[in-house]
Image (cartoon, rainbow, N blue to C red; front, side, top):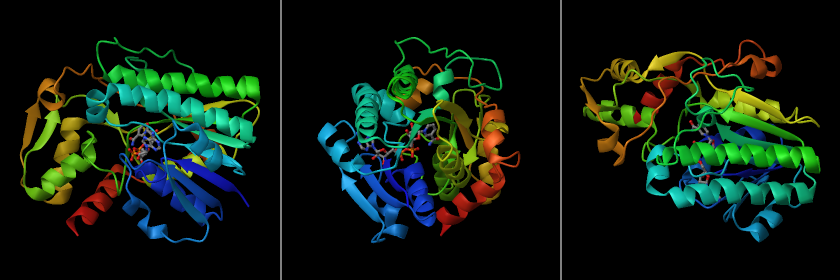
Length: 322
Ligand SMILES: NC(=O)c1ccc[n+]([C@@H]2O[C@H](COP(=O)([O-])OP(=O)(O)OC[C@H]3O[C@@H](n4cnc5c(N)ncnc54)[C@H](O)[C@@H]3O)[C@@H](O)[C@H]2O)c1
């Protein structure tokens, strides 16, 4: 029987992962400071006999040490996330993502955990224009004058720290570079595009597309994401594994807005908004972001991910409508 610690387990992706791990028979501990996560995200498993929830920060070494004691696996998802939050709170972003990760790695390594998953981000590819992004590509982070690159950089440092612990201290490691993930419980407050669009479409308000709208993203449903995280982490071995996890079908953000309007049966308009107006400062945005999935599929099979963008959007729209 595996005992798993999920940091950030009350968040969007974390709460789906907790459900999956409980479903697989694991005993699960959640460590979360509830800054962007919510207790309600865990309402479907509240009171579960194999679930315990610890309120605390990943930057608190004593708290992390006690949470990780006796755990076999650690899934480190806690982070400052979302462009709005990152731009508004750059210090907190770097502290949480760098110091928090270092603390969790140090305590997990000391406790002798047998599997460690680090949630990294497609943002580490930065301004790379080699599409699709391959895990061995160079990371091209933009200027430190833009706060958004602080997030990318913090995730890259987290990866280097994790690989250092794997190589020097023998920590069995999987680094997942997560691409845009969508699904139930994601909130739009920190800059996530799909919940913003769905809310506006259902309210009959304009959908605000930042920049030209020609920038593309590839989305993955959170259910596929947690399946990937779970199955890959079970493969953690002596050699650190860095792997892209995401969808590979790109869609321009303006087309995504039109798709949400159509699926929601809405009469909302689409309005272009500059990055300065949206975030209070210029955003050095990436035109395209699309993963190579060859490495993930070597483990997860060629049919992964299974859920189409339309099916995913329909689930989200139906939930918000009800
Ligand atoms: N959602 C995406 O599209 C996406 C894309 C790339 C990477 N990721 C990564 O996946 C992970 C989960 O993201 P998410 O979308 O579920 O976001 P989220 O904000 O819903 O989840 C983050 C969780 O971490 C918690 N947290 C933040 N600071 C903490 C601290 N100091 N101590 C303890 N807990 C803390 C929050 O309360 C929240 O529950 C993050 O590491 C993020 O960088 C997500």
